[in-house]
Length: 201
Ligand SMILES: Nc1nc2c(ncn2[C@@H]2O[C@H](COP(=O)(O)OP(=O)(O)OP(=O)(O)O)[C@@H](O)[C@H]2O)c(=O)[nH]1
Ligand SMILES: [Zn+2]
Image (tube, rainbow, N blue to C red; front, side):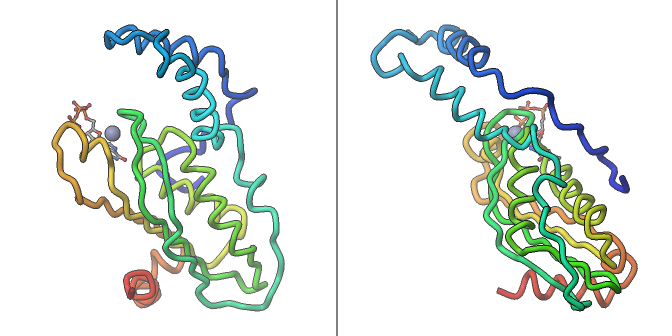
């Protein structure tokens, strides 16, 4: 693993729905609500199901997702941009969301993957408690490991609800992170070409 953040092993088993239900009931009591009132009665179970979906990526590995790999003899930039992405900030467990751009340059064998698999990879890592920097790095490292490309670039632009609806309250502030590997890291012109493709809207 080349990144600053080591790859987390997938968690064992599955999300413990009952345990989340109990915890959410406790939270409702702790904020002074009545978890047995009509509107809230089913909330703990609903939240448990929602969390199972939002954190499903904890139980997946990149190789489960980036399955279709084939040789196509294409050896220039492949970029999927504006991939909608929703994740959960691990500090406050509220969403951060925005777009991810994932590009790579296939190696000399022209080893490529299905375009949708790049979006699936973004979803997989996004569906974990995250910080944006680690999310960006994990996507780049997974593409790097599985496609052995000449270069990888991942850029994520996101708004963090923890900075919008609470705390510092700065709606509209965008956080931009990037992770570059191989030619995108070593060659200024290659990185500049990718950035102009990404930012040229
Ligand atoms: N680097 C980074 N920081 C994040 C991310 N998501 C949230 N944060 C920050 O995590 C920090 C947590 O800071 P703390 O001081 O421990 O928590 P807090 O008292 O709730 O901080 P405030 O948000 O400033 O009210 C905050 O500055 C958040 O803006 C992320 O993806 N990356
Ligand atoms: Zn946060």
